[in-house]
Image 1 (tube, rainbow, N blue to C red):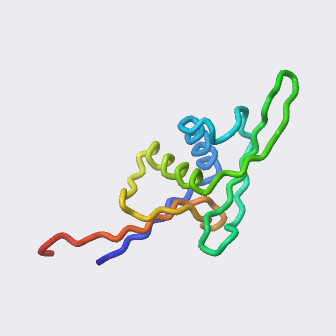
Image 2 (image 1 turned 180 degrees about the horizontal axis):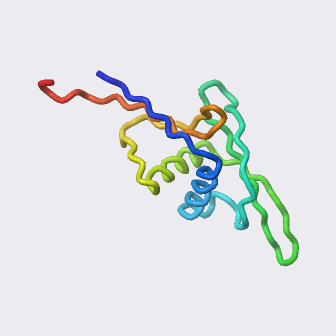
Length: 120
């Protein structure tokens, strides 16, 4: 039975767009305010997901404060999947999906075991 492995690697601008898109879908993901940037750190455990930390500028009247929010592993994965859906990038429903760093860039890795059609 063949196995397919796909890597969908996002550029810095694409990660920012993915953060914005996921924030629209899940408003509790980040506090209100402008997104200033993000940082990616390697996984804490081998084979684990990378850590995504987003910097947000929050405003309270005339007071502006920058804060950093570390995204949950599940949010990072859902954010990557949402990015693919919004950009019409086909991904298999049954494939095993996980977030990873590939060459320092955030990526969605998909392992899918397909079945050959009967008779061929």
